[in-house]
Length: 402
Image (cartoon, rainbow, N blue to C red):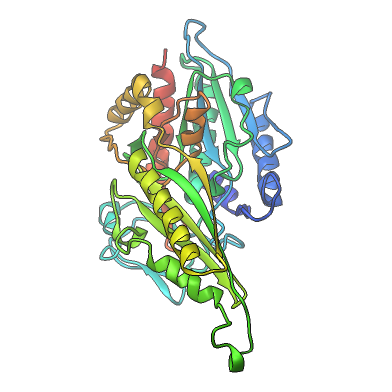
């Protein structure tokens, strides 16, 4: 299997998830891709490949060494971010990259000045967008790497223990683990292969919550509104003003958390605000949620109609707590990376993966890079040589696990 061809095939399937759909998976395209992946797996020789009713794809590679005790899983997600179009993706193949500016259609470009990571990619093959859609490397690069590693493991028959594969829907909307059958998967631990530049190996992520703020106003004709109108949009903006200005994504990095206004829609009568809350530190995470409760209470005390209602929902937690007791599974991946000349870089994930929730469901699950950059945007790209190396790292790690 050629990893470039597999990747280009996968990104041709539109699979953006949609948190408002109310179905599982949240979009039908994910099941279309899932059925295609099952077909690919069966052609590879994975006889038990199947997709369940929720759109999860599973399969297994039998052990070639019966003495190996651990069953290990490899996981990637099929959906793509829904905030940028993923329809009719037209990838560009940039061979022997010369280190210059890459033009993406009429309005966008990739420049080392804006994206310093590009400076280290000279001579490599980059797969970019055409500037009109995202690419889908998050996480179809991960799927391609797992599939190609599995194909080679099946043919090379080097010693390894039992290996399970899983491809999940709806990771981008926080539901990738909601219907994951951990018990049937039957693994002692697993790795997600989900985003990040070559070398990244992560076992800590944000604690995450979503918040919905609903503001109810009162509409009165503007000519006689004095003392009667309550403009819900104005109250909503007042709520936003009570949030810390510096604790937003555009002003934070590393371990710094944030409160992000993700969506707003309103009229005089009714306004809805959607926020996401993130922090690696559990105590600071709880403080951010309390700040939102306090803001709602303040405005409800200020206005007699008590116009603000707030609903908070925890999405996932920092998997570090579950991985620290099992650091040997991180070490084995570090060793595999070093064998392929890759220096492991352990950084906190400023986001989440299926592995975060799976770790709390009893399946410790650190995350490995995919060789992708600029996810969730029209300037997304993947590095082909890095994808090949990650595929090889996966194979080596599987051979090391006892």
